[in-house]
Picture 1: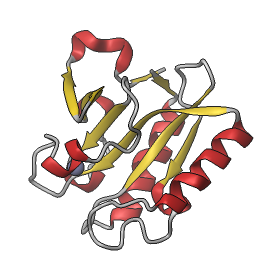
Picture 2: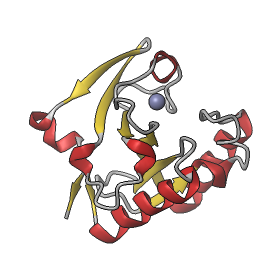
Picture 3: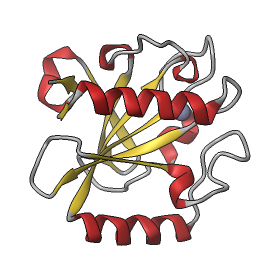
Length: 153
Ligand SMILES: [Zn+2]
């Protein structure tokens, strides 16, 4: 999938500001239906103001209802989600990440950014990427899976 440099900056700055260096933050990456270009970012707290409160990310049913409504209005679909991990922790999925896909659809992609996205020069290649294969199984995406990963264009 593709993202403009401007939108990538909006994403990483938004994650950094929300996490404040102390907690995880995350967002849905949205494209117009049928497109692989990320043209909208919806941070989880826009869907549920309490999404980040507990330190880990939880979206109540309400948040998903609001997401569905925003997608409908934008004529968009979720291309992927992204969330941050704490400083010094790996960008490997936690058990909780694996058990709670933000979108429970085969083919959904989840990115994990390191160090609460504090690095001002954070690039897509610094983030790990995982493909949801259903039944709470995930596959790690590598550079050779290039079309599924994010590139700045
Ligand atoms: Zn995680």
